[in-house]
Image 1: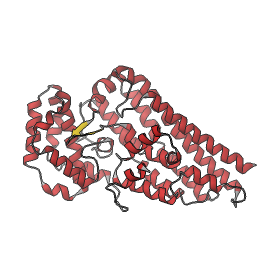
Image 2: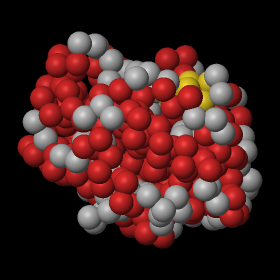
Image 3: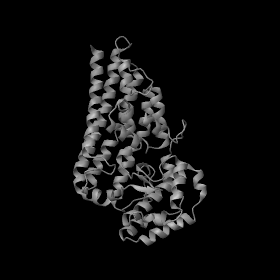
Image 4: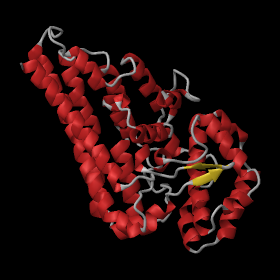
Length: 369
């Protein structure tokens, strides 16, 4: 399976989890002061000032950064803000800086990540204080970055919880408890998106902020920019039901965005798939609920209730996300969001999540009868 190759590429079986707060504190390129004025420089289209800063970064780059994954991620974060900013002034102008691409590739090698920033460097790795990196300097972008941070900060724990669920019998009380825990870990996603809808006008979000969420070329290869498609949700869906799907449309989406996840996250997903024998959690539950295989049917129904509630919370997030897309996409002059997906694809994911909810209900009916 191509997705399995994505999960294991450049990623060992034991990967340390990222300490997001530690990366937030770092300024390995010594450019805190420049990052505060970058939005104004970009707005003034002073490409010369940004080019000079990038040249200085290359000249004075500390190679010890390559020895530290947190420092390398912080460097990728800051370079991405600067490079994307100059790219919006003149496409690919950052390529005028000799040695810059080699640094980015080396940082990607150190982090086992793509050689540019992503949704995680924009949100979870971004300082949540006056050092916050932004493209625009707008309060609305700060609110958006904070929402991304708050919405995704517990989703690594969701992946770990799914890993534990993968080995538990459905008729155990522990399964029910962990399924409820999944909901608690995920629940910040819905208010985060609602906050963006309320506090960031579509005109600001689509016409001033999202214009920086662009693909960038590194050594001839194009890397996707910041997109919500890269968050841990893609892995949660994949483990719950997606691994069983043979739909090429879904497999392409899953492969592309699982590849953009952090090494720690990919390692969790791969280990969980091994425990599930390369099937989804719902497929495992199909086997667990075969006639005569349950010891405690009442407990199994309670466990499925908790799992179904979690799936419905994912569905709530997807409906709100769809509404956000409906209000923003018409302003952009394109039918695709920053991840390259259409509104139709968001509705496709809603449909697949609804199928999963129905699947759990059918399991409950099987047990009850």
